[in-house]
Image 1 (cartoon, rainbow, N blue to C red):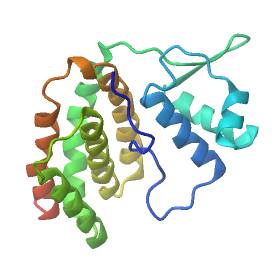
Image 2: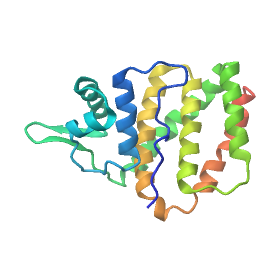
Image 3: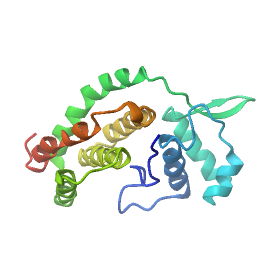
Image 4: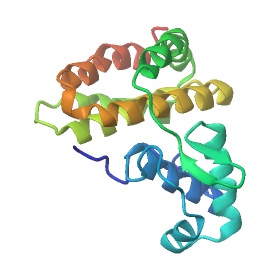
Length: 202
């Protein structure tokens, strides 16, 4: 099964200084979403400290945030675990995203700044190329498109909510890559959406 690269979606927004806790959060989150830390696996805090070369306090803060995002579960006296995955949750997640994502696109069309529009044009150009892409590359591109649109809403509550739901759905996609046959088509469907946003057609 393919695995996502460490660049997958998950870094602080460009231009923002990242605290140690932020760096730990995005690093561990990427490990979880790429299935490097498999669903149900034990989280070893000491190993994370050594691997990321980040202190125990920022690691713990990152893990608390990941628990809030439902990617980590904490059991008193048992330890900390990566949450398990129920593929049936994908349909439930899609129901929520189907309500929120169109509103995010509308706000992005109304509020995107010139630098953000330039960024969306770059994604459009990348999306429009005909070169073949691996599933991993397609998912990474899809993630960057969604993250960019969320940021263009200039509504941090909506952005954070959609990032959380996207991450939960993405992990299920990663588990299902071998059975996914329409990934290229699904990602390409963002072309008209991005066109409307950059033209300001809410």
